[in-house]
Length: 97
Image 1: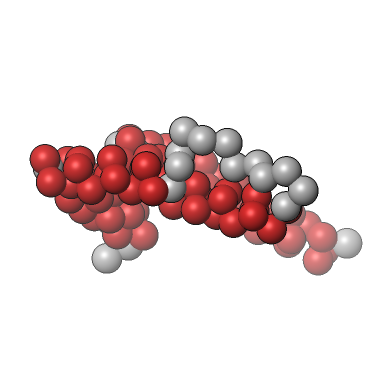
Image 2: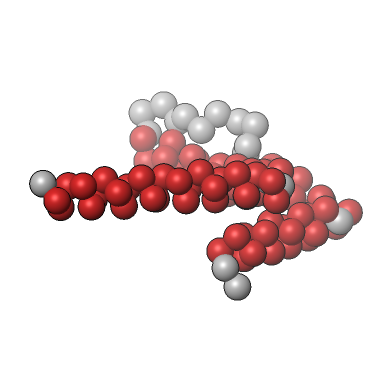
């Protein structure tokens, strides 16, 4: 199975799990736990601020994963392929010099 199919399967699995009534309840609880709507900053405590940002990352990851579509995946992979080919060509041109 290639990467685009694995990615599609992962996205569809997330959407199926969190798309159910039970999944939405769990997702809402995770958003609250991760304090997605609260500031991360803790005055005079960069460690606590960094920790809070890390916790929020989980919620943002879920949120972004759930809103992806197969069209988004196709567009990303197409752009990635173009970028990878350009980088390969740059490397070949640098070796020739």
